[in-house]
Length: 143
Image (tube, rainbow, N blue to C red; front, side, top):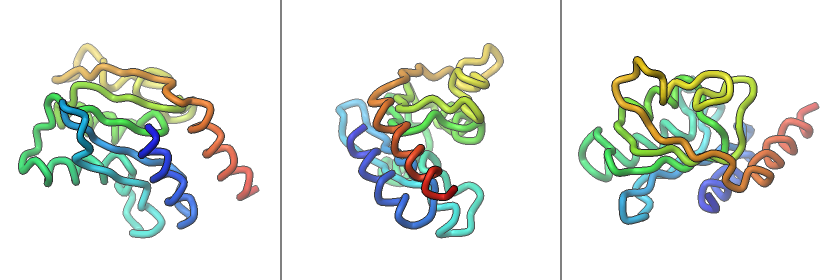
């Protein structure tokens, strides 16, 4: 989570919402990392999780990321939760819960829905206070 937080802090300086994500393989090695890039790239899919998943798939040379874990500072939205499930990740470790758009148990539970093709384990609240504070500081600075 420390690496994901570092990515989030760095991306907050670009004007994007400070969210960071890393994908680790079964041995714990980071094989993908990302931060929000929606504003920088003008890309609505430029979420930290999507960037990290794409990099992990490129590193492994395959789209199936079975055995891997996505670590992200904020609970994934429906798009990112769906991508995590479709990538066949084993688990998602998240920092802060997202009561507005979270899709791993707070608002929706996309990754554990009984209709989903692949269910993903969710571990929430890891370094939650730090992750939430980073977002609060960012949005407070805009208001």
